[in-house]
Image (cartoon, rainbow, N blue to C red; front, side):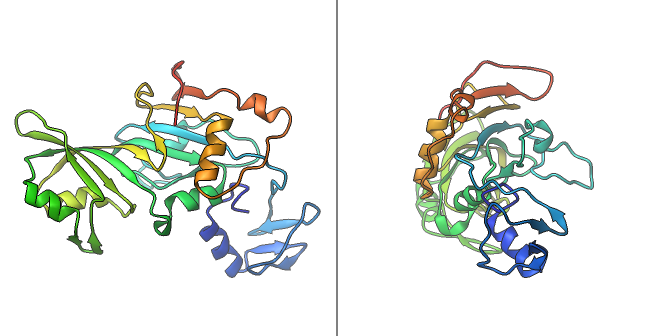
Length: 267
């Protein structure tokens, strides 16, 4: 079910444990095997599982500030999901999140398993950010930040931190972490007594934000890039079906509804 884009593996396991998944009318359990001829329902709604799916789709999006990474928001704020193209027979699953005031690289996929592999803490996938702060860090602070920073929800640390200079009171740093806790980078700098003015994610694992992909644009990755990402994530891809290779032979970069662009995306 995760591979069919219904959600993450963790979400699917929770639904199974809660008794919300049925196979041919019987409540499913963890480990229940299903085939193409079985009838599967989730919360009493029939679902279509993609047993023959060759490759999932992967989309990268240059998120601007002022958008939330959620399908539902009581405050009615603009959602990134409203900017994405529709996908037939599946849905986009976000790989991690960015908070409302953070911009940069967001990854979406139709594979819940891939989303889980990329975002779960146990896989320790690198996230790289460009950070603008007011003030500077000393060399001792930078070394200390790569050892341990105490946060309310436990210790954290930068894998690497690089001084990228700046002008006046504003200073830029390039940092890498291997977790995705809520507002983690911002809180780490706050613990170092520096306030973050801008935060931009520029890389997630082996996927980098293309320089020419402007804010508000998205791009679907080419088949070869998708296969390379699956291999890197430990998910051996199957050969594409006839016709699918042609459909995915070009990456497609688009602006949010109303505009268009011809830039291409590269991993």
